[in-house]
Image (cartoon, rainbow, N blue to C red; front, side, top):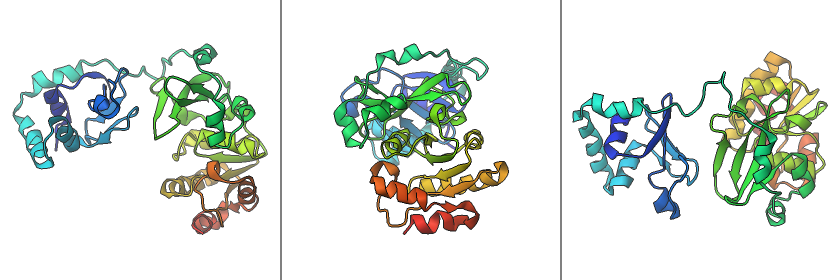
Length: 316
């Protein structure tokens, strides 16, 4: 088994903090990929698996590719380098990591947050709204803002009961840049749009921006799970609605999300339906026309049909 911690120390990487098995630091390939240094620690590596990712520039891989890229050597030599780290005394090398401060405060000590924290952001530019078939009114209704410095959408994360600001998710306008502020915010305990969610027919999507798109198409009160993983806390929030229409993306992750909803429906008595993708070539509501959105909702299939409710029709 690879001792990832020893490898990190031997590479002399600029580390910042530790959270359980995850170590945070400045991305070692950031400058090479973007031409700029990583000013905020954006890179995380798992000390058990060696898997790593930079949530700013997107650099990711495993411990072998990390050594290969930093040392400028081939994969075979990288493997040999890693194996040789076993000869380094553990006590002196691990002390640096063990002394790192905890990056995220314990759950019982939540980080203070207020609406004033959003004041530095502006309204989304018209050309970015147009690219996604969104309106300024719909964005404002859901509190969506824009980070001019990073060309990123600002998507508020609110408490499911008090609607107080817990933080926000930053989503880059291009690429797959995501960052949660503050780090460790519990977005799995709430849903995007909770403060204006529908309690009659509730449409559930993966992306917060798809919630905004649905409003533009005349579908009010949709919510987002902030991704393709549905938590039990999010399922409990959905109990507030008379009917729930799961509209996850038409891809492998979306299929898994749909499958995970069925046991929640049985456990919490959700009147669950699945969006009908029959005859729709795009993978999510953000790319659909208004008629496609309404047809998929109107023809939604009950979860009592089993996988046929979302597999057969989604793959058509």
